[in-house]
Image (cartoon, rainbow, N blue to C red; front, side, top):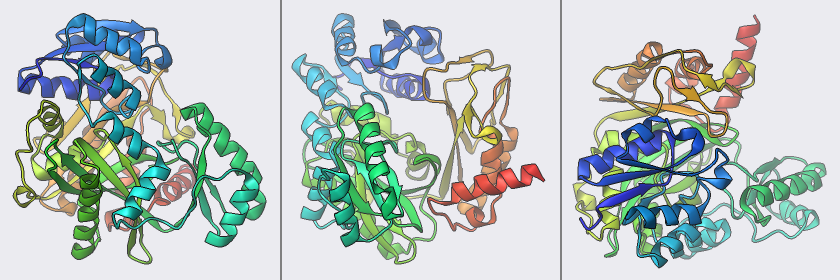
Amino acid sequence: MNIKRVLIANRGEIAVRVIKACRALGLETVLATSETDRQSLPAQMADRVVCIGPASASKSYLNANAIVATAVGTGADAVHPGYGFLSESSHLATLCDQHDITFVGPRADQIHKMGNKLEARALARQFGVPVLPGSEKVESAEDALKIANKIGLPIMMKAAAGGGGRGMKIVTEHSQMAEMFTAAAAESLSAFGDNTLYLERYISNARHIEVQVLGDRFGNVIHLGERDCSLQRRHQKIVEESPAPGVPPALRDEICESAARLARSIGYESAGTVEFIYDEDEKRYYFLEMNTRIQVEHPVTEAVTGIDLVQEQFRIASGEPLRIKQKDVTFSGHAIECRVNAELPFEGFRPSPGPIARWQIPTDSHVRVDTHCYEGYVVPINYDSLLAKLIVHGKDRQEALLRMRAALTDFVVNGIGTTIPFLAYAMDNPAFSAGRVNTALVGQLIETMDKSLAS
């Protein structure tokens, strides 16, 4: 491998995850950290730590120039961006290329191409991947209203440069259009520096299904199966599992091949995820977007395939061809991941930063915990509230579900509030237990949870 020293431009559990992958490959690690994270677990684990700015992400983890300057100054020959922050920044990828630093991810042009949702939709149509009825760029609320009359309500208003649920609004009544357009455009401009919006038909009984792909610079692209990520709050995933329950095998194969075909069409390099909306009523799927990075939920794919995706990212970035052909990919059992956040579910999921007085994680052999936390760690208010990812694997979904319930019981955190009680409540829900999931289920669970608490 021609990579020797890696600058990790991220924090939290993904920084720990990348450090572990580097250790397994014999690579040196340099952690770029903010002032707030100087005593964090990844800072304790890395071979070297460089503070690149204050707590504000805009002045540290989102500062591409500081990241590349740190890589140059420390002699790092590669940058791994993790997820979030600048992981899908074509600008950072370009800067790395200009300084002869390997960006551990796809090429800048691929990030740009798939990062614009309108361009990605056009590519999907071009290569025969189904897309939702929708629009091109919408110039005004009046235009949006005309288009919505053709598509039919309800519709989803979306940011072309967006992701993570920002700049997204559901419009169910014509009278809402002007207000929603203004709000979505303002949110998109604030989050992405671009207020371009477009419309898509909104599917009420929908599931969120995504496909993991890997590609190398020699044109080889494979898929590693699908994940169901339908349990979401405010378009943010809470629970993920693989394989997706209840999807007919032939349709599952078609979805996965569509994802691989789209990635292959742009010569995609690195790990990536093609996301789809699945209409549960019509049993049809539609392209949603492509994430050109490692996903938070990648461990469920690792659990069912036995393939270390982060290590594969490094091999691909160093110029190696894929070691795996599609026919060699095998799937074993079922995996579920729950995201544990520092939030108070019974108080509207408000953030709960502060010192962790007790941190006891499950230790069974079939349980994996990806985390940066420890007893005494102070959870900062400045960043995402993710504390840990709890992953279980079983021979089938029923066994995985039983193991997740047990693992949540064994996961004890004191001193701050966490979402563990809500996750346990979700695992016991009859609809989820039966695999009857959709993107509206979390809202229903929150409502019934509040009612049960009040009684």
